[in-house]
Length: 232
Image 1: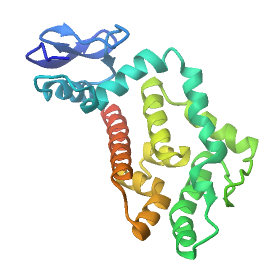
Image 2 (image 1 turned 120 degrees about the vertical axis):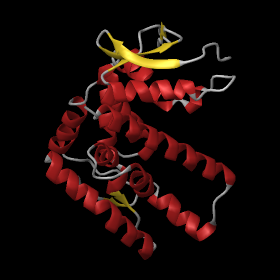
Image 3 (image 1 turned 90 degrees about the vertical axis):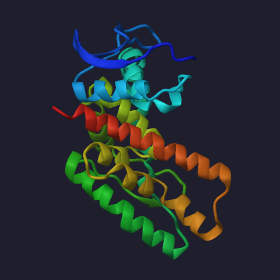
């Protein structure tokens, strides 16, 4: 799509802050007004549009995409998004440990167990770790507590949490990122612990490198989205 506007600008709108392209309100793909709660996020979205060159490249506008997803999809299918996100707690990445080699076992214990301990204190949700790939059912009380943490998010934050969880493969890591227990770089590193261990031993092919770079971008964008939402 060719760029057909000169300037994007954020400004007050009904229900919050909107973005206008040459004075015309920006709309989502489903034709809803793209309105967000505060000026900080609206200005960051406007900056994405101003950074476009001759062609509009949606892949370079993650904040716009997250906001539009929240408005078009999450608000209409909130229960489904909640269920998809909360389900990760049933078999969370940080609960499944290798049996060997010892160096990987030790790294997982050092990096993942503190997150399980943090989640226990923060959400009163005790997760059980296991070795190998055989699923270990988590307690109904823990799953209920994690589901409650997901339900507590508004549509915009739920959208970001869903994106973080999918990118990290872990609701625990995503919540730690949402809560400021981890930053985006640390969340990526801890979620890619197994892959990084293998890369250190055997190297990395171009396809894996591209996939990991895409995850870095997705995690960082969702984290920034939440940070901007939290600006008063």
